[in-house]
Length: 148
Image 1 (cartoon, rainbow, N blue to C red):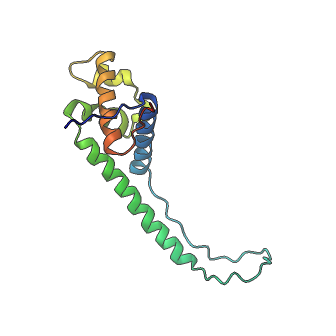
Image 2: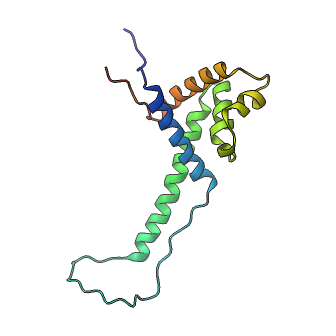
């Protein structure tokens, strides 16, 4: 009995993982603005027939606020858990390059020259980053397989 790991489309998988980590940063470092109910009446006249539906604006907003906060928290925890299970060098690379608050202003060169001690080459950095992306893509269900 043998088990083969899937062959992944490098570009599509890398794009998917980077997109996931970008959303992670947005959820982690930007505050969530809660929706509030409108209490002023509209001056527009609205003509429409009965819809036979009741609406609870305050209830809908409360549900949205609670669900959205829970979703963001679970999204961040799931991502952090997947990164925590990476090997040490891969975890360090992902945390420094993609998960820090300043990651929009940090590039790959700064990470492999200044963050790693001792510094590593760009080839080694590329290999470590691809292994990290491969593992994250599989653990977060972001993998894009190659069609044969």
